[in-house]
Length: 138
Image 1 (cartoon, rainbow, N blue to C red):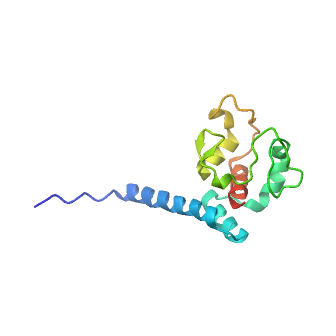
Image 2 (cartoon, rainbow, N blue to C red):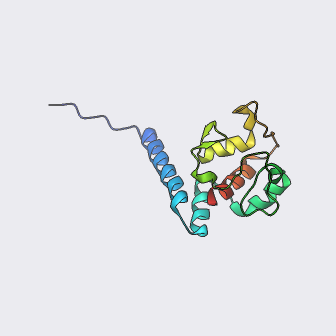
Image 3 (cartoon, rainbow, N blue to C red):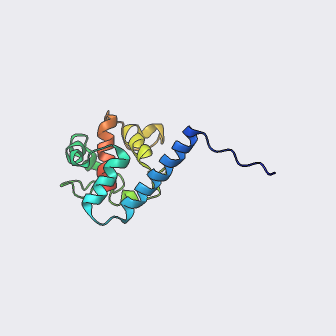
């Protein structure tokens, strides 16, 4: 009688389910047309609140370097435009585009790309999650 495959451990199965759910949520952001739906999905995958982002973008000076859709005065040309970030495969050309990586990049960009022009701002993890939620909701 052939050996049956051993089922995944409970933890491995949960990780697999979480990865599939995160991938599905990310894909949903890209195809959702309704701002409310995109914002809800962005909140779920980032644990951030996009409504708090405009003030955070201004406080940390993000708008001086980046063009950010929906943020008045955010027309900087030094950094990459952040419009359509959810559709990109990579963050800053160095990290796979997912919510954990985006938050990590916002908090500590030089730990991933030591020569980046993006400064370490001292932004908190929660504030970075709020910015990520906003960017993925666009």
